[in-house]
Image (cartoon, rainbow, N blue to C red):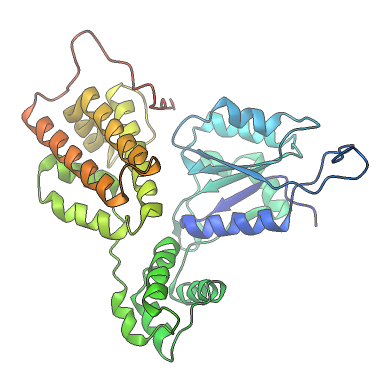
Length: 362
């Protein structure tokens, strides 16, 4: 079966979207460029694997994305270009993508991920995206995958499939009890099932183990930062981070990523750039950006990168890294409450940190 020229994934659940992309890539290994061969040129080379590269729609797409999307060559690497939160890309960027997709590159497989909610069974796709020719073409080719996420039945199906693939066994009545305690979020479900598997050891998950499921709603990173800034019971928020996001070092890095993306947005607002945000949250984010100032936002960036470096270098455990990050954030926000709002040093607007990606303009 010929692979799609590009794929549009519409789903608010990142784990379900990732699983879908994994399945598509496994089902369609990259074809060799015509005329290529392996070894001494006496036999065709084995099919290569897709080199998956991720990009984010809430920052400008780098030049590497456009090069991989359009450039071809005999020895080029087949790449899967995954654009997360593509619904946040400006309309002009979408027009450019649509034009590029009209001339498909056999060595590039773009995945445009629209992580939008569903309303009455239909995804809330921005109008400027829904009207593009590439969507009409993808619809006609059946290159669009839609999923509203997990409902009650979907949770049960996901648990059964995940348990089967990870050799997790349930005692009578345990599956129903566990499903009733789980949230409709595939990432959280996978984490909780891993915990239950460890508790069960070589045995079965019992109905009583459903009490081990401890999951609260996903943290709102902006609410977390506002709680720190206001000084209103920040430890309550921090405990939620530790419980829901940092069950292991693999969950720590997604939290750091959210923290850095939110800080980038605040930097853009403080710099006077136009950022695509809902009108209901824009004033609050502008106010927080002014209160932290450029120095405060740069310090958040430094703290997050110090935590990441400490773990990857082996100098600190995930718990130690998060303790230092927590202490640094508490100190920073306490200072910003006492300081003059704005935080811009004399001499004009400072440059962003060298490691801070710039923002887009709408």
